Length: 181
Image (cartoon, rainbow, N blue to C red; front, side, top):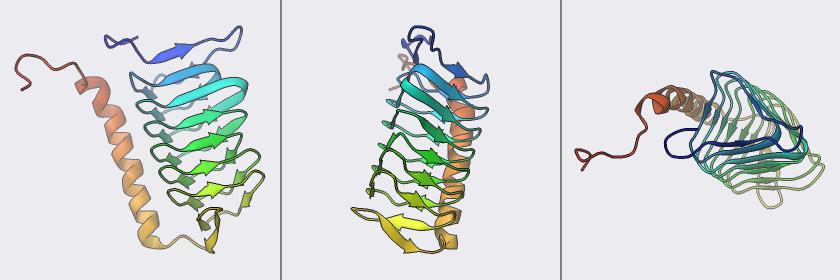
């Protein structure tokens, strides 16, 4: 645990989180039970990964941003982006998937590699999102058979930002001192 009291990583009975040593877990993130976090992944402030009723796996290089909730049997592939406040409940996302801020993705949904679910979208249970497509809306519907290059580039920049932040925060995050004002 850090000086700030977190991150909060708990076993539940015999189910214990397994976090790769190169992953970054923010001080206020919570991991409970059967949770696996891969190399270079990052779990940010206020995120909750609750592996009490199914395993949760976060692939290498993936960033789970502030206030995300992952629950039930959930697999997030490599190099994915889950924006602030995403609810991923019992889903399978392949490598390179982006789920935008505040999106709700429900049980049984499968998201193909490189697909994008836009911010604020509601993906109903048991949806199948093909690889490389762009989905948005309430309920989410396919808006494009391919993700525009400008959007792909934006999320590549997001991946790079979070990879850099995951290296910076362990070195530089600290309570403010008297000279911080």
